Image (cartoon, rainbow over all chains, first blue to last red; front, side, top):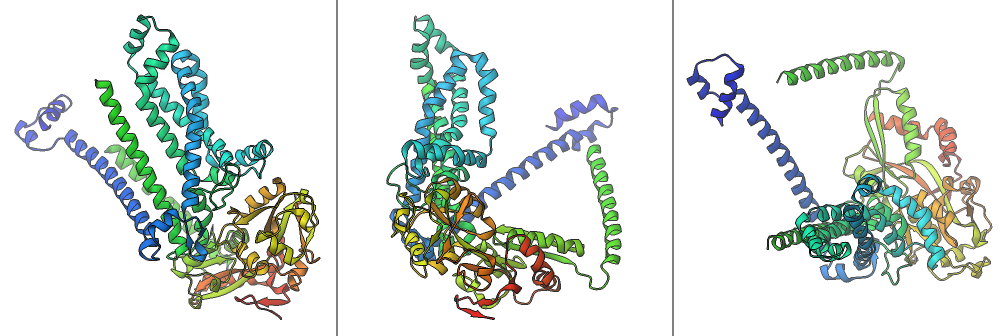
Length: 317
Length: 297
């Protein structure tokens, strides 16, 4: 390290005592230490922040079970949520969260994959010029705006279309569909672009049509990437609070259908946290909901890693 | 390296300049505020219902006492009470008595009532209801009356919009109307603004709001033929009202005490408090204690 850097130095400074130069750190070396120091410091701070957050949420979240002696099984399977009265059944929110997440992913995936195919295979030029900015714009819209549009447009629309009050899982699905669409689309585009060109060329050379090539070669090869995209979209949907809260109706009751008010983990958290007292059961119960959210996002992350690894293996074969 | 030193020098100069400015302004202002020199930091956290009033009064207060640094934050009554109890803030804003909140040791806190808020039921204009009996209101919120035609309105399903569990507005409403009965599980919204918008646009919706959030897009409902007006709150004909509290832990310091005195002064109570849709504590002909017992003054 020192030798190379002193080699550099030779050119811009006048020749000095070589032995001394070799024994002392040069300016370049010191800069190297400096840069490394800064990056280690940043990494250290980030690790510290993440670790303390994990510790904080976990310790607060398990207080419901250790301090208030609520049965874990009852917490996860109970259906009566009224922490003010000591009833902490979180199942309605867990079901609500999963329902909107899966519904949004199921609705969004065909549109996202279709758009991605259009952007990469059918009209790459127009795709890059027109669709790319449009999709990037969708990412940039703050979730409160989505929620507001949901409240002003989607809820009345659903009320006319299917009846009820308009608040419910179906409205939340609709809003989340638009919100996760850009995530899934951009990541699917990336994975379609990453398919080696010779796959496509070989397929076309064998006489396959464009559709056959897309559906049987390119999509097949990009499947792990597309699955990752869907999971990222689901993680976004699962964690979304504000927009969902505005259209789902926040009723902590078991969702019987798609058009009656329900609630999600995040919507209960945001509505309830300001009105509870530190260290009491209602507050601890909300932290437990946060812990469930955290575990779920860790699970989503783990899933993405597993799929990515599988995908690499299949490409190598 | 060179850049670094230049930057550092630049910062140093700016800081010096700023410090100079700071001194200059503070010396002029101290000559203005003649007698009692108030200084220090006051933080008020909590109730979002009280927040606009506290923020406005705080701004007026600091314009008179420029050395005081006063911050007002929302966060909810629960946050306000727990933060003041832990000593993190000087004032805890709350819509409800500290005694009503589990996990708060009210004996350690001092109550300062700074305003009164009237609240009342509001319905969507389509429902065709303008007056309800208190008993009917209770039956609606406990889920026994489910259609507006059962109380003289249109044949329309009732959609109940509640505030979040633990919200001060909800606690006040339930104390006055449900009197211990449990509300039926329904939609919950976390702010007056959301309730206002949803009731205005959802057919059959019913909820409750502070008077200051009433608009002509909503139908305000009379209860037992008493109209929701400030006058009716002041003589307790209208039962659904609560104090806005600012809690301190133990004896407040001089600056905090001065601000509380300013908040409850006739000056503020008669102008700012009324302008912003609250009711002056001096106009009340009755008092209510933490258990909800009302006595006339």
